[in-house]
Length: 462
Image (cartoon, rainbow, N blue to C red):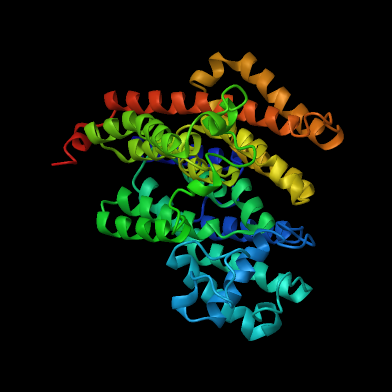
């Protein structure tokens, strides 16, 4: 009787906890119901963002990324495969030449067939450059949305099942929060469904690979990650050296330090290749060594975060949109390191703010910014674990205030004529300072896992 009474008491306590939870109406269902409900909401957010402008809208002669993706579709469906990457009278590589690997080309081919079926004028060779009809834009947006639903969404579900299955540390409400964090990624949504790209494909394949590795399906993981590399890595220029060490105002080491050291002017491209390779590999090594010594799923995610940060901060020719790479593992670690994730997400958004302004996506940016941080604070995750963030609360508060002021200044204040990109440079400097801190913090956290990882994980390499 005593055991039955105690069991009922615990059940009542759980029920009360559930009703106090922000997801009380959903968590009594299974993970599938939670995922489907959040997926529907994530789709609505994507649809809302897709109603806004995109890269290069109404901006001839080359327009922007939207036109590049559309042009690749017309090239792949109108020319034989052997001519897709070759410069010719029918394929001018100076006009958004296709230079990504075959998986991107075949993705463009499939999407091109879809556009041709419903609006053949939108992919008509020679006559469709700058094509911007309302129906054509609707079809283009649909190709991104369908790619998201077919690749990224299932991959997230696979990861949640793989990483959290059998882990008693997390409740259903925690898993619901984690799903929301992964599916309602404001940077990914703004770049793919606003700016216009297909990062959801390469990132979805990467998430699937990570999930496979977490369940010891190494061959599946290797296959999926190879597909990811064959979708987004540059083909004829794995590192695009002809573009130079960096481009625009990206918050990485080379661009930030160029304020003091004129890397492009002082050093040859050959030497800069060696410097960037050495810096990238050196900053990856500590994380790689720790994971080899004491392998674990959590350590694997930390390793992904540290290594992707290394590539973002130190590799050759990085775009500001590359912030999606380290943001992915940081999102996967959101339940373990909520404060790290929240801090990182804020500055990741700030780092792409100039790009958002150029694409006239400010309204979408502000709306999804507010929505994301409402979701983040739904369970007060940021207050549960602080670590190094709590000890530097005042300092980080000052940085946060400065970043919010920068948003306003960038929108309403005109920079001095002598320094037209002054505000971009300030945003870059602030974001870089925070990214460097996060790299150090992540490496330290990964190494402290060595003391906590069970002995069974230490035998994994055997």
